[in-house]
Image (cartoon, rainbow, N blue to C red; front, side, top):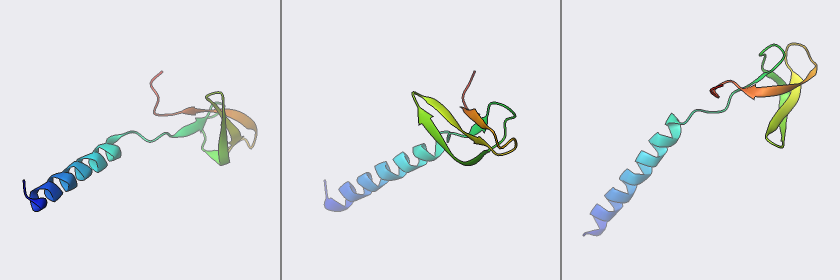
Length: 69
């Protein structure tokens, strides 16, 4: 196999991996109190996410809106 065909095959694999990564759902967290976006950063502890609610301005848990229940 020539160097050019090896390079083309590697490039094709990289493009496929990139396209597949775009298809994965990004995590989108909303507050458990009123489904608002977070105010600032949210934090994770023991697979639980928490932070300030963007609407209530209260400390609350956050859930992944894309996750099936």
